[in-house]
Image (cartoon, rainbow, N blue to C red; front, top):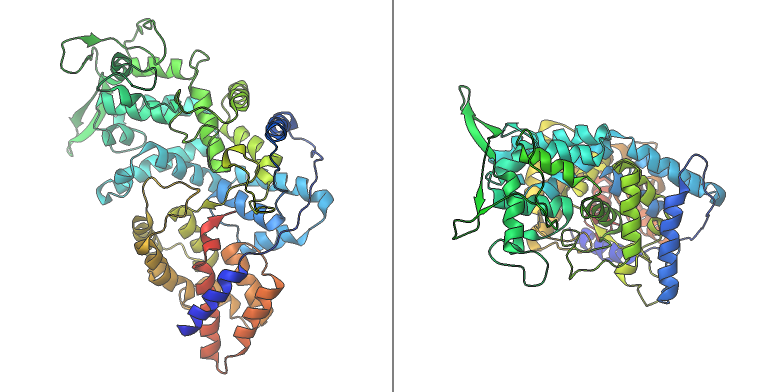
Length: 518
């Protein structure tokens, strides 16, 4: 244990490594450079106007780890790290990165990651950590996974989501039951998720700092007033349905409020089928709605760049102005023109030079985060961290590992934290240092990585390199290699050598770098 403390001390110093800079602005064939180039031009103009110096482009190891975590939700496997870093020809760099982005966006892992991220946005954390709702949450994630796998246009996805019916404990219907079918809760959640506005602040009184009135809030809530549930079958399962009529009243009054879209003064024409939720979805994705496309591109931008053009992404109100208003409008228009294609949007943003910038600062002055002149270092979610370990260190997918994962996610959850923060408290740190995940990673009988590197054809240098690639997605520096090879050559017995390798794995999975997306 003393050795681990000493190694951790040295590793914390060594883990800050250098970066090589290479630029290549040549566009690869068969890509759509126009939108991505326009994004880069708009940002460059703002930097010049504000006398901001952007950071250089990232090196291949930094970019590889970033794009795998952002698009696939896990750190890259060792074979990918070896292959991607093996070709360091600067003239091929951009084409190589675009090929990687395209491959990840088409992969099943991308759909799994998107389902996880959107479940986080759609359901309160209390629902996701409630053991009684685990199967229901999994059902929603599976529904979302299939939508993303098919690249369902975003407006169609939201339309299906908002008009969901049937069993209240499966698919998108869990969203309604988790909000108790209450129109006011559904109005607050849907306006936040799909329009980026906090209209619930006007639930009890007119908003003091925004345009929303109490009547605006309840007029929007009226779209969900037809929703009800009935019991069906031997198990008395709740079935969601829309009943005719359905009214809401202003609190403490008898005033009935008719349905009305947010920000629209006139009432909509009555739907012939009297289905208000369906009527809402038609308006939501129309060009008459100024919020839908802007909220979607802002959320995706925040996912990739660590913060939204309007930040927080759920507070696009009058008092929270966008850092780059022209860019936000342009992206919303392009997203609409491309028929709400989320995969196109992720690809367009990921191939920009802005996304490719390094997070390592040049000089003492850091560019303002809202300038997007440097990529921020983002904290991995608990799911990203555990799934990366399962893929690259545990090399297991059995039922016991799934149970361990659920326990890990519960202990490591920190509600409301930003991806730009490092919010680990003492409970989370101890869960990492001494928890079951660490045992799985450092025990040769359970760790696929430990078993692999103890094969006789691995020399000490190869052991160190492989463990670095598996945990932090890069080659070790010369200094790190020398230090850890020395540590591995000191033992006199196989058991001591095993412990020395275990120490190295333990140090790296508990380093700040392993919990970060650069």
